[in-house]
Amino acid sequence: MEAIILLGAPGAGKGTAAERLVQRLGVRHVSSGDLLRGAVKQGTPAGREADGYMKQGKLVPDELIGRIITDLLVAGGAELQVLLDGFPRTVAQAEMLEKVVAAQHGRIRGTVLLDVAEEILVDRLAGRLVCPTCAKGYHVRTLPPKVAGQCDTCRVALVQRKDDNPETVCNRLAVFRKDTSPLIEWYSSRGLLVRVDGTGAADEVTERIVRALQ
Ligand code: ATP
Ligand code: MG
Image (cartoon, rainbow, N blue to C red; front, side):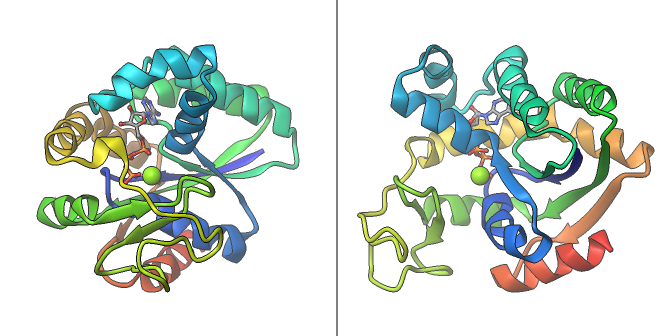
């Protein structure tokens, strides 16, 4: 197993870049947020536990998301090439990942930090729309769908995520600063961090990431 980690604040563009990197790098996209939203929608025990945290913009417990991701990595076996989007988000989660990678004789190829200023993050999240079916992300102004309010691929009506309201966004940014930003130092000290400018067009950001990983 080989993992690339996408690190960045809410709205930094992890999901948008990941969609494009899947084709460019031939990796499998694993989004912790999408997995959790899927579990909530299906009403699984994990989903029922996660829902309350997510609505408030809090992190779900490390054990809950850790088990979901670990199971998936183990099931993927030696051939798995994965792009982790949204995991790890705490030092405890990074430790869980380190353990499973070692147990599987895998490696972390690199961690990409998507750098975006906070004012831009707030604007991106306020204008974000997502497809409830395929989870593809759009922005009303900077990344609009071909037909207003409709997913290009699924043709269903786009929705705003429950946690993309201003108050919850503020919580999510605070959580990033407190719980997730220590991972910058964690991966940097292991020689695994590359910083990439996350502003500009989605395709440009994707190219920067590809170059940074070479
Ligand atoms: P963006 O989609 O712009 O990257 P985000 O990173 O805040 O924004 P998601 O990754 O979709 O959004 O996560 C949404 C919510 O799911 C989080 O606010 C949190 O409640 C939960 N979540 C996702 N990943 C984790 C994780 N690794 N640990 C704990 N909670 C998580
Ligand atoms: Mg996301």
